[in-house]
Image (cartoon, rainbow, N blue to C red; front, side, top):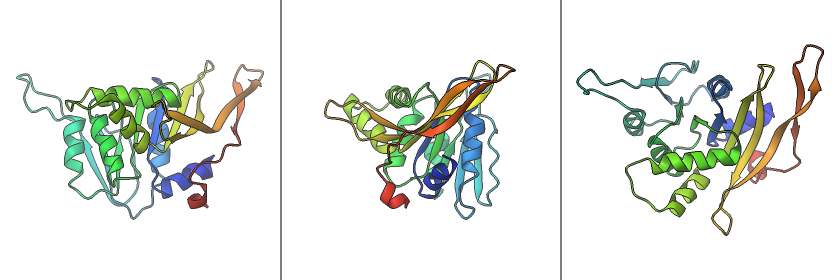
Length: 223
């Protein structure tokens, strides 16, 4: 699973890290972003500086809250639009939670491959639906099917993580997003899943990351 994720990063696949609150999304994104080749120009956009990229060409941007008069606010969407003019090889967003999701989907579909971000969702299919809802929060009026097509075309890999009852945080799914089916619904196939095998004497969850046997559609290029 680790080698597969590393190969996807090198191939500049668009990767979304999803999970609930406290599930380790930012920590996982930090680990994945460390696999980005050192020569690439990376723009990091966050609400507060949490990601710690060690590459040479990293440009960091942070949002700014408005003053007491409601002036001077800088949102993630503002920073994202500005970042597109700075010739980024990759764009890494700490968390997508608003209308900037629509701009991100557009960028992923128009040459800014290899982008990464986190989003609150519980499963790979829920991640697609969540991003769809966030795209609809933008000021752009666009039909629902067009939004779904953009989301399905933009996303390549969804990595889900979760916090288990024993407090451990595990990666639960590595899934590939496929084109929409004939009815216009999302299609996601799991490539690796975390299988719980039991608990040890101290009550800690035990398990393994097992391949499902389904091969990714981009396997020839991956080889």
